[in-house]
Image 1 (cartoon, rainbow, N blue to C red):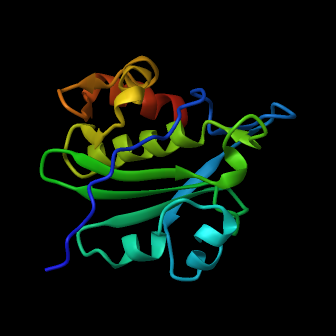
Image 2 (cartoon, helix red, strand yellow):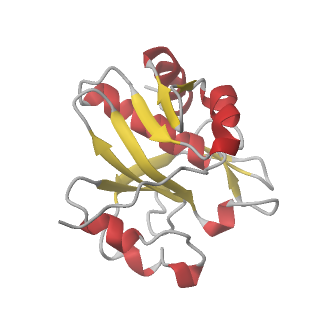
Length: 175
């Protein structure tokens, strides 16, 4: 049996936005989330500045790997998540924003928050009342408590409960 790596997330929630916002113009762009395909792998490799091996994540049978793109521009991946739908929550193994959405010169804000909101919505859809969990790097625990209203359950475990999930879903997904 292949050993899987336990990741500690280090995504930054730069701000909670309506979809994603161009950091230069301030324009807001609606997003969509879809499954990452084998074709997408060509652009999300380490040689293109991505940190994780998304090809390997796609191979893991317990994982679903999704990409975040701008509506009507599905060829450019803004961010990716690898998750597992459990009976009582959605567990986020990894979240990564595109290299051009990191640091001071980032193109879009709100990518990581949008991905977390998607996981919350998926949790509601799959019968887990919005509960989402993930492991955090130690130095980001307080960040997730403040930005996502996540609860620190000890060690590196973070949980987003129903109330916090509703706020995120309402922020990003207007009905």
